[in-house]
Image (cartoon, rainbow, N blue to C red):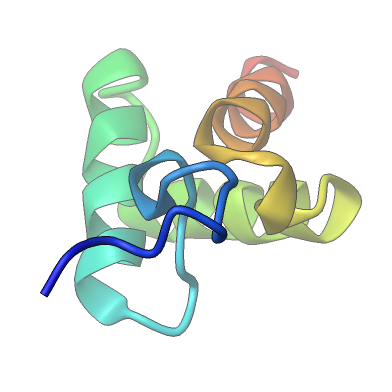
Amino acid sequence: MSDDKSKVGKPDRYLISFKQKYEFDYAVNQLRKKFPEENQTAVKKALTEAAKKVSPSEGREKVMREARRKLRD
């Protein structure tokens, strides 16, 4: 079975699925590496707020950038 060439778009790996716990936890761990002084609850809150501000369908990097901005403030 081959790939359907008519379905084009961004690969799923560039997105964060907030319905999948392991993907959310992975994003939280990536942020905690950058901000080790922040507790896990603050990082989760910043990531969730960033996803509300920037649509998760716009990509992982935009959501992570917004979350880092929130944690710096």
